[in-house]
Image (cartoon, rainbow, N blue to C red; front, top):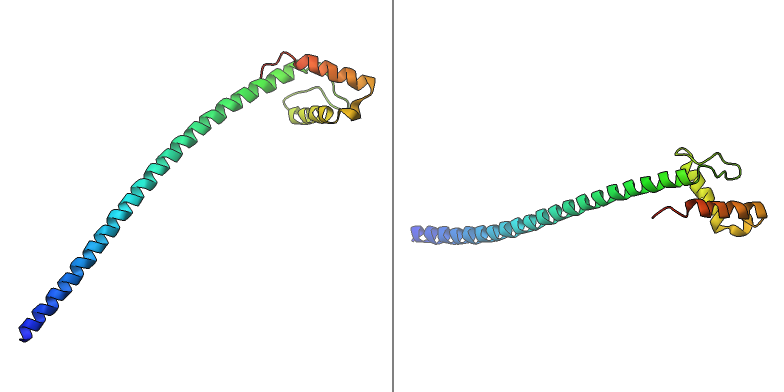
Length: 128
């Protein structure tokens, strides 16, 4: 009888271990599936990032070309209180131009109107 009880107890423990193993295996399969999905998502994101980087590089080259075209077109036009346009003062020059066109009411005197018209003519041929 004692052996019978021990065998029943051992069988019960074996069943519990088998059940626990089955649950662990199912959890492992689920984790492997999640890992696989995450790896695929990561690969897709890396590919998207590469495409974005290539697009950014192309846009940077285009911007560089436009900057050079603008510098060449406006090289002979002096804005009030500024040096001629160059790579070094490009941002400040563009900010001043933006301000002039945004606040045209501040630039209504004849000299400024002529300057704005000269600028329009100078940049007219730049292809964007």
